[in-house]
Length: 263
View 1 (cartoon, rainbow, N blue to C red):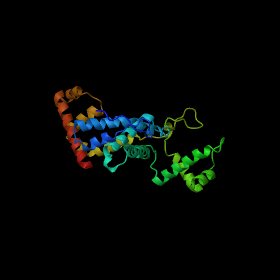
View 2: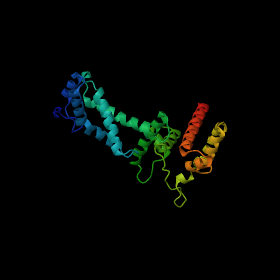
View 3: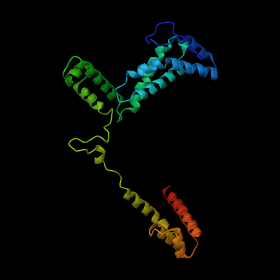
View 4: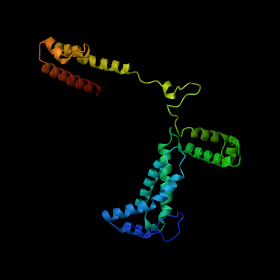
């Protein structure tokens, strides 16, 4: 199903005239015909959404991901647009797509959780610094200049500039200054697996002590002496199958008792 071709000028050159199509969409019941029309409306408006996404490139997110977020915003706009209110779809879709992209940056692109007030300061400082840079060629604008231009205090400018550092994280593979190939990740310690072993042994000890002598002997020969089930069977004068069943029974009993204690 095709929507009508563009018949009048829009701010976006490739924006179609879809007023009639949205009217039909609002009247159609759920079903294949309505889904086909909805999908077609999303398709013809997708270039506009992608053009909005391009405005946000260079802020730490790939253009491909921005396209996906913009497409999600477009889908929301198509699903929630009400032509009965008398506004053109574009007037509703542009802020919806833009808001979805901004929400993506706010919720997913900050390395640290930053309060909304600090995020707003960051945006004002970033915008002021960018605009002032055009009037101060050859040098970066000072904190005082940014404060005066953005109507902020110098303290607020400093806070906003600090927030700029929270927007992206330094890679753990980054080389530390003053070193020869020593990465940041090399300076970060990790958990000692020995502690987990100690905790496990302390937890299982009383359970092991409660086992019959033969079962404790089998566990000792298997896991502390490294003997195979066949050798254990020969040493104890029983079948290898019997050893296997005894081991399985020990495992089940120990697991049940440890889970009962931890619960």
